[in-house]
Image 1 (cartoon, rainbow, N blue to C red):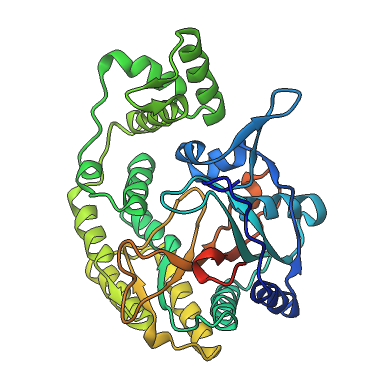
Image 2: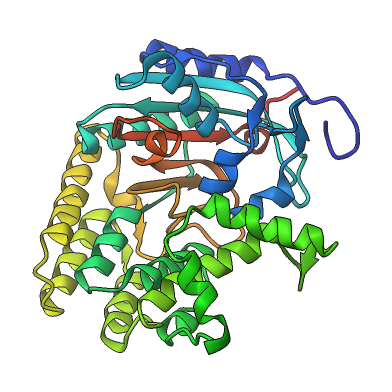
Length: 382
């Protein structure tokens, strides 16, 4: 299913060589079903993904979708065959989602490591395998950008930013938006206070279903360009802000966060600068100390693998979807010298997503980290 109706290209021999590399390193190949339940993708990737995935229904009316990526399907596979245990997986196959100026069916390859408790070593291994994979494909000179969702979250916790304001802040950073709107308190219309109090803390799926039912009864599919799911998300966000008295980011927190987001440079220098920022701001918080220690330890494992840490760039403002990623994140893009420029599409990217298995229903808090290769950007398909 490509945008012009042509058949999807088959993976080339180079792609099979990439998969062989992963399997040689102990990452067993899996192939989850192409049809997947849609709910996990909406819950973890945001309602916006509904506009970009291909949705159908089974005979009972349950919504299914063509898999838009592999990480959630691999997580579901792990739950079915090895829940509570550690395992490493690799994959290569087609995924399906609408993209601007790119095919809507394309091949991805990647690896997922689930259950390893040596977190900084596992992070370094995934990054190393990503670079080894690019080298195997003849693309070993990309620029490497690193970030850390765990560190920015710990910083906001140390600054005592309230949960709703923290969530708004992380969403703004991940989307590359200004923090001006987050810094201001949330205004809540008194006429809506009762409704917001009623839905505060409720199951997001239930709130979405309620909003969808109300709009369906009224014969409305969208309001102001927003879907029912997006409207429900806004209600939930306002309800959380209402419970906190509409608190915004705050001037001091904004100042410290702006300084953190401006950090850029090689990872060792960035770790030192982040520690200095915490000291100057008087942030003596064990959560922040743990995140900084993990950052430094990860740098040590990356260097110990023989990777050129001094050529990588850590960027404080590099962030991704907070419902998915919980720690170390990275991407490798074409180009020379320094940070990935805006608009440059990554060849490979990934990171840590420790909460995924529990989101998928597991009772085990298994850490996880992985990455995926955008094979059509690397060439070699026939």
